[in-house]
Picture 1 (cartoon, rainbow, N blue to C red):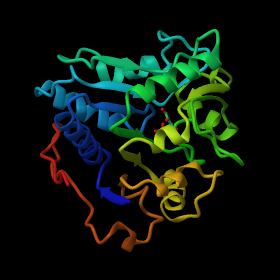
Picture 2 (picture 1 turned 180 degrees about the vertical axis):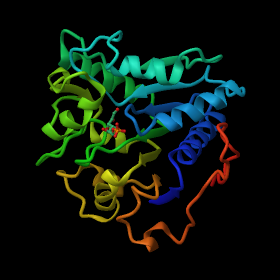
Picture 3 (picture 1 turned 30 degrees about the horizontal axis):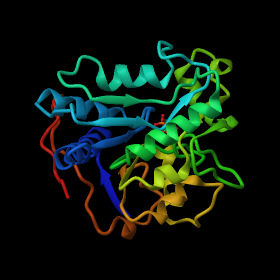
Length: 266
Ligand code: F6R
């Protein structure tokens, strides 16, 4: 597991975007597994900059982790809407296919099977993740057991409370979602988890160093051979410094409004 700690979410976002760019440049038919939420926004902002600078997405397929049940693609809090408005809108180049689970499907079991088949036919090269304060990845919530494949999940009170910030009222947060399973996530060739802020510090430390347990799903990432945690100083604050591997805090060393050059591509 690699840990990279940055002095700002913007620098961290640039770094994550550069890793996505490297996959797109390397693979003939790149497949990116994508996430939603506040944490990935700096990455998506930087990635949009790369596309505006000429990065070609026309060979790329994207597969999102999850979607709320009951929200259609036009609903401003749906993950369909999130992806269009925060990543794809107005870009000079678009992915050849964008896949997000359909939370309005009449037959949800069938939709899960369709999604698994899609993942099977398009093995994920690079999986981007955020992490819930309860340790969820995708919407794989803490539980006594974890499901490997795409499934319907009941969101925990902690996740509902945390995601209420995107809705007018907490009652408006859907109680259920479709999510890719843990095995599908672990089958990605490369995994990058982003986390920012002090509220994530404890869960990040447990995900990196704690026992591997189903009631903290992010600990499963310890079982994968190519995982990078991209953190800011606050989310890394509960990790002993030696766990960073002696790395300095990374910065793009730019105070201006435009993204500065990337520090590291290793
Ligand atoms: C969303 C997802 C979730 C979020 C997590 C963190 O597609 O997969 O696991 O990554 O809930 O959300 P934020 O970034 O809003 O703190």
